[in-house]
Amino acid sequence: MARYKCPFCDFTSSRLYSVKAHFKAVHYPNLTKCPVCGYSSIKSKLLVHFLSQTDEEHLTLAYLLFGRNSGLHFRVKKKLRDVALRTLRIKE
Ligand SMILES: [Zn+2]
Ligand SMILES: [Zn+2]
Image (tube, rainbow, N blue to C red; front, side, top):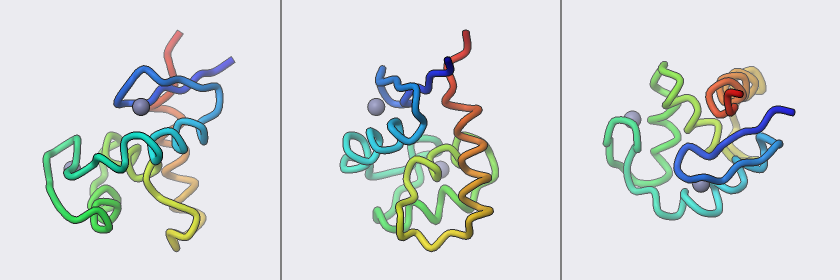
């Protein structure tokens, strides 16, 4: 069975959305800048920053961050989920 890993610690789960929930509960409160490029901004703008980039590292973070009321189009959410399924999966 596939497992997914948090990019910031050793947390793993067989469910991608559990990794997302973990990230939002544990890491998001401490996030003050982009972990990929160091871009620093207020929290509410970080998601916009992640979404404005095209590399998979940023898009994975966008997946982990967007919430229920993000207003993102379902196609965007699906794309982000597809990226995260690939990048967070633990390779056997
Ligand atoms: Zn973690
Ligand atoms: Zn960045």
